[in-house]
Length: 287
Image (cartoon, rainbow, N blue to C red; front, side, top):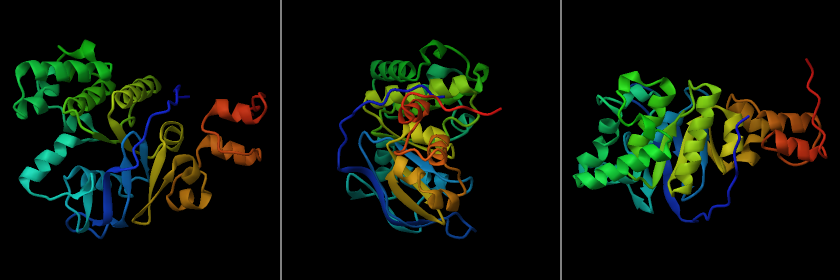
């Protein structure tokens, strides 16, 4: 089970980023997302949930500016995103997207060179670039990898270095596409600990995933992609909606499924909360 500490963080009611009546697709394909209006607020952890192929990555690409919607728009701090070079360059300084496969983003010979690529392209002084690289690697728990060749990294290390490259840009919002996919349990713990450090340092994080158990324990809000649309709400409320989760081709998170089966009140997020609802008695597990 993922060990974590839920912290109270001041959350702004003003949307940091959002969409308004957004419709999106890819060339030669039918509509992937239709009439999507969502928002992300500063300090709020957001899990974007849906089955494979549901449109999670399409939504992330629209939010990052790399995919122009067919209709509707993306708004950052209330202003509509324009898809000209200058506006997109400014948008990507504030909103960074890290793809699922780190090899899609790592291309330099060593870790320091790769993480410094974005800040160097911004024309920042060398000392500032160095400070950003050091800070990003430390936040991702990857400072010991600074001098390593990228081709010598493990898959989990490459994932964290790819995130560090985005963090070095000092974005307001970090969008992650399946950041724990392909990681072993220890790698998942390392990644989630890194995301907690990023949030404590002031970066808002949203991740796309189909791991409902992880989403329930980590996120504050959920965006569930279902039938080309997106439903937004508190993560424990949406993930307890069996009809919604079924239509999204997902499964109820095990704490909520167990609470339902045992007819327990509330919406537990993990084993400790299940035990609390049982009055301190751990449930017996058959087998």
